[in-house]
Structures are given as C-alpha cells and as structure tokens.
Image (tube, rainbow, N blue to C red; front, side, top):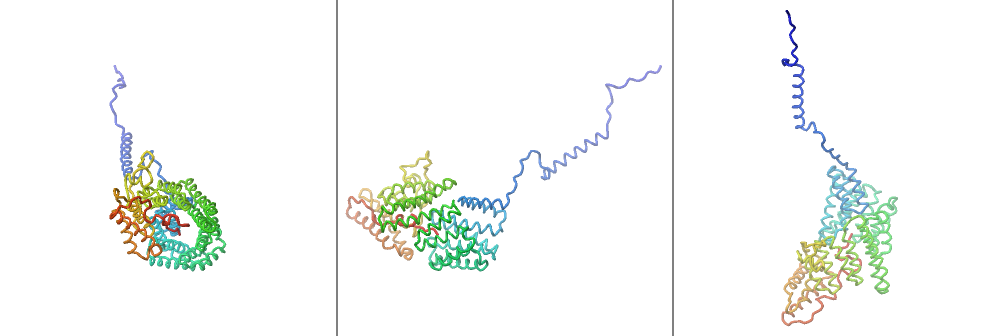
Length: 499
C-alpha cells in the first residue's frame, strides 16, 4: 500500500533566498558608503549642535554706533575692529574707527597711553584715505586725527608743526572734494586754533555753524566751544558744550570740559571778588564732574578721569582731604598707573603730609612693588580681602609733564632728612637727574626752569648743610611754598591740556 510522506514540520532543510542575500549586500555597501561620506564631512552625524550664523558687518557697525552713543568708547572700538575683520576694505568703517579712537584718547590718563591711541587712530585714518582717496569725510577725519596728534607733550616742536601742517592740508583737501562738508570746516577751525590763528578760526567755525546740518553735529558745537574757550569766553564756551551734550549725553569728556571752564571762571572770581564769592562757581564745576562720574557708573565704565578732575578742583579750594579721596578712587580703577600715584603725592605734599607723599612719589618716579605700592595708595598696608593687593608699578620717564614728580620727590627727601635718618643720597640723586634734564632740554622748560632750579638748589643746600652741620627741626621740604600744577586753574593735575 502507498503511504503519503509526512511534511517536514520540524526538520525542514535550510534553503537559500537570492533576494534576501541581495538586500543584505546592498545594506552593507550602503553602510560602508555612509561611513566614507562622514569621514569626508559630506554627511553630518545626528544631534550635532546647530552652527552659529556669521554676523554681518552691519550688525557690528550698529553695535559700534550704539556703544559710542552710550559713551562706551572702548566697546565701540572693539565692534568696529570686528567689523573690519569681515570687510577690511571698507573705508567708511576705517574713518569711523579713527574718529572714535581719537575721542577715546581724551579719556586716557597718561601721555604714553594717549600717544599710542592717537597713533592707532592715525593708522586707521591713513587706511581710510588710501581706500577712498576722493572721499571728503575720509580726509576730514584724517585732519582731526593729525591735529590731535600735534601735542607738545608727545613730540618736539618741529614734529608738532609738521602734524599741524599735514592736518591743515588734509582739511583743505576735504573742503575741495566737498565744499558742503560741515565737519571738514569745523575741523579746519580747530586746526587754526592750534596754529594760534584765533581770529581766522572764529570766522571759519561761524561759517560752519551757518550750515543746515550744523545744529545736529556734536563736533561743530565742541569745536566752537574750544574756540571760545581759547579766546577766554568761558560762559559762551559752556553754552556750546551744553549743546554738544544735548546731542551726545553720555560723552563724559564734554562734562569735564564744562567743569574745567567753571573752575577757570571761579579762579577769576576769586581774584576779583574773593574766595567766598568764588565758592558757588567752584561748586558748579564739581557738579559737572560729578555728572560724569554718575554717567560712568550707570554705563559701567571705570574712568578715573572725572575723579581726578574733582580732586584738582578740591585741591584748588584747599580741601586736600576730599582731593586725596578722589585720587584714591581713581587709583582703585587703575592701581598700576604711575601718573595717578604722582598726583596723589602732589596732593599729600600740598597738604603738608610729606611722609605720605614720599611713598606715592616714589611709585610715580622710580616705580614700586609689593607693600610699597599699597603705601603709595595711602594705605597702611595691603588688604587682599578688600581687593587692595600688591601690584607692580613702573615709574614714569622724566618729561615736561612728569618732572614735577621728580623735583618734589627729591625736595621732600631732602627736607625730611635728619642725622639719624639721612635720605640725602636718594634726594641728591633725584635732584641731580632733574638738573641734567633741565640742561639737556632747556627749550622744554623755558617757562618754569628758574622755579624748578631754585627748588633743586634748596634741596641740595639742605643736604649739604646736613652733611656739614646737623640742621634740626626742618618742617618744610625745599620749595614747600611753590605753587604746583595741581592748583593751576583750568589744568588737570597731569598738566596735560586735552585737545
């Protein structure tokens, strides 16, 4: 009989499927291809962070303009520099950068810092003119930069005159390229003032003021105020600075100029009507300096300048305690700034705190470090817990605006010397360096040479007398009655006029 074979339910023989094999081969090849593409960067892995979009030059320029309006000039400079990294051949960005760098130099304290910033501005202005030789504004901004570089504290008289000649030429080129360029006309007036052509400068700036756009240009009002200030018309200058402030309310340099003009007016009132009559005018001066301080606090700018202006005014009033407090506040912003140490030393000296002045003046002249730097800031010692740390301070080279720190330092050392505490070695060394400086550069000290030399001779006499016969109870250093630049009206404690 025939029996049907049982179906192989549990012992089915394996069978190969050509279609399945084809799918597996394709999947393997596809995986290999994807790995190769990932290695080449053609295919990105999943879940990678989204790439940051590149900012446009317009966004950087808007940021720079906003920071300038806010008074944050360093931030504005940085924004323009970042814009130029994207578009290095944009002439307009270069001249905007040059203008801001020029104005920012007014917020710096030491002459080396000012000089360096103005040279940076000149490089930017040169680049703008090279990229746009037929652009009137590029030449006008270069004229401004050259004029501000023409500073006798930075260069010799011949170099200053060369800067002014170049500035004059640039301003004329700017006006030839565009006779309607109001900025070019205003900057030309500023150059004429610095060339001591005051009457012509007044005529030119009045022409600029008649232009339709003049009322909306801060530079025009600033320059007119500068012209009036130079002519001794301080009240009118204050009025023009106020108009400039209305256009740039966070530009603290303008507040400081108003304060300086009020201080000059107060000095004249004190001479003609007495100190009591002058005090309200001095208070107006302090009010504008204080406005600059408050604006800086609001925008987060640590600018020592307004505090030094306040200190200079209080020093002129004879309130040396308040003056010292403000210089110390300035030092808290820049604890390595040798010039501010020098200004504190002069305040101590004028208040007859001779021992205190020694530490500050040493930091200003020959430099100091460690605990000496804290003593130079008027502290008993360093207090790291209060952010009063020891720092390294590099002394200032002797120059027309720093020589005061040297001859007063030598004078104080001589006056404080006693038989058991003889400081004459250091005093005579310093005074001799002052004498050498006076003889080496006589033209730089034509106005004050005789006074400085008298202070040097007084100090040398004290030390000579001490070495021969002890001189007891010397209470006033040599030259103790000499009026110093810290009390000169209209001049900041550094003695450096701001353009």
